[in-house]
Structures are given as C-alpha cells and as structure tokens.
Amino acid sequence: MTVNKVWTLKSIAKELGVSNATVSNAFNRPDQLSKKRRDDILESCKKMGYSGPNKAAQSLRNGRFNIVALVLPDSVEYMITDPVASNFVKGVSAVLENSKVNLLLFSGTSDSINAVSDFVDGFICYGSPRNTELIDQLRTTTKKVVTADFDIDRKASIGIDNEQAAYEIAKLAINSKDDDIAILGLRLLDSNLTCRVYDLPSSDFTCSISHQRLKGYRRAIKELDVNLRDDRVWNIPASKHNSALIAVREALTSSPRPNVLLCMSDLIALTAIKEINSMGLKVPEDIRVVGFDGIDEALHSSPVLTTVHQNSEKKGNKAAELFIDRATDSVLIPFHIEHGGSC
Image (cartoon, rainbow, N blue to C red; front, top):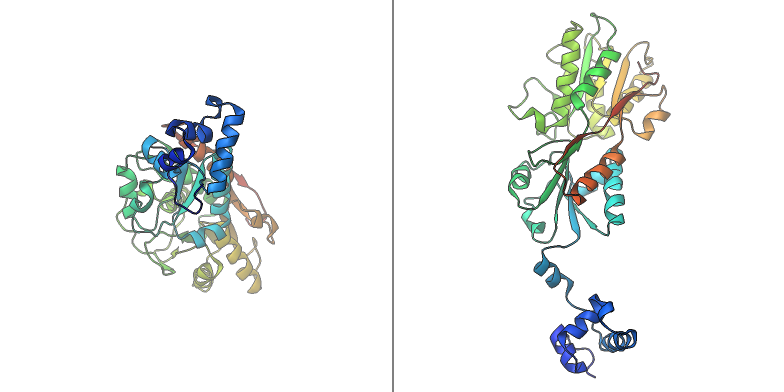
C-alpha cells in the first residue's frame, strides 16, 4: 500500500479494490456494511493516512455546513470581555452544541459577511454592528438570519422592550419635578469619543437599543414634567470603565450638579457609584443612580445597584432555538427591575 500520498475517495477505493460507494458507506453509512468489512476498510484507510471523504466538498454539495456565524456588534476581543455579551454567547453556544452545530464568532467591525457566507448555514446577529454596511448585507443574504436586540425585518428576532424598561426605571429614579437629570448613554453616536450629545443623527430608532432606551427615558421625563437640560446627555462609545469615567466626571462637575444619573449599562452605573463615593458624596442621598442589564457585579456594589435585569443567557438560548427551528417569530423576553439601594 502507498503511504504519504494525498488520497481521494476515488483513488483510495481503487487502491483497496472496492467501489467508491463502499468506502463512502464505511465512513458515513455503517449500516450498509458488515462490521468486519467496515472495520477492515477503516483500518486500511487509517494506515494509508486517509481520514474520509472531504467534509467541505460534502457540505458544498448538500448545502449544509453545521456552522452558524454569530455576528457581534463590535470586535470579538471587546465582546468576549463584556459580561452581557459573553452571557449571550454562552446561551447561544449551549443550544448549538446540543444540536451538534458549530459556532463561528464574527466581528461586527469586519468589512463584509461575504467572507464567511458561503461556508455557514446562516447568521445570528447580536446587536447592531459597528459597521452598518453589515446590516444591509444581512437584510439581503439568502441565508437564515436571526437578530437579537434589533430588528431588520427578517421575521426572526429576540429582545426585550428596551423603551418600556428604560421608562420604568427612569420613573423609579425620578422623585421630583426639581430633579436635575443626566443621561449617560451608550453608543448614541457613531463615534469613538466620549462626548455630550446635542443632536442625534437621523436614523432608524428601531435599530438601536440605545435609542430605544433614550426614548423611554425621555418619555418618563416628559410624563413627570421634569426638565432635561440640553447638555445633559452623554455618548459613551464602549461599556468600559475608562470611557464611562470621562462622562461621569463631566456630569458630576456640571453646574448645577445632577442628582439623578440614568445609565444605559450597569458598568457605566458602577463607574458612577465608585466616583460618587470617592468624591465624598452619598448614593442615593446626594445622587440617585440606576443601571441597565443586571450583571452579577451590580449585586456587589455599595450600595447595591438598582437596575433593569434582562437574562442575556436566556436570550442567547432563544436566538439559537429560533435559528435551529427555522422560526419566523419576533419574540420579546421579559425583564424586571432589580431593586437595590442606589435610588
């Protein structure tokens, strides 16, 4: 037998003196051969270094790859360190692994989904990608698409009612018409700068959870007849301590100083609480702070953070189930308010 040769199904069958179908059955349809015949063929193939029919070629022929690309809103490096995103990925992977489907993490900063489109069964897209061109590509691809935390009219999406959740927590935080409010927003602008927001870009508000949350805050503020100053909304480009700290310090040194901070993530809110404490001020006596997400760290802050809790792992589970079931549902999962001591 010839060893160290690049074997194909056809050449290995010829070498063994059997049909192509017999070799294929030995690897893929064991019920078609006797155990001894199959074992003999597999043992011979092993000795010659042939590991079986080309899986990529098989996938191309049958149109199934058992791979799903999970499109993240930002770089893979950033997203796997974010506790909310990592819980979502955990939920997706648990369901896919149970169904023998592989997961490919795809950066939302990439130029095009075309790099992987020919080799995956479809896409689960978590949040609106930084590269907005990917959204148009996801709208038009012929592959299955499930979106999480935004909707692109592909008939399958999962999320929470972000506007209603923001409305409810804002109403909880605001006590008086005389309250002075600051909104520490997350990615309200397509910018890498931490800055004040005076005008929002004209965009589809249903596509951004941050814009939905801002809409909920403003609805509560209007209903409670409280004035939101024009310079009291910040854009924070990433849910990270250093990015949030710039906005927090600007807000806390504004005059008059706000006594209510509506934060679009728990990490932003935890940064705010730490800075307020370092200034010798008290939460909630001097400044009330609320967050959004319900991450584990929020339970260990001093005081414990009042926040919107969403089950990101369950959201990931459901996104994967929608994909596997080829569902066309638009699903909202429940949220609840975690009552801590920060407001």
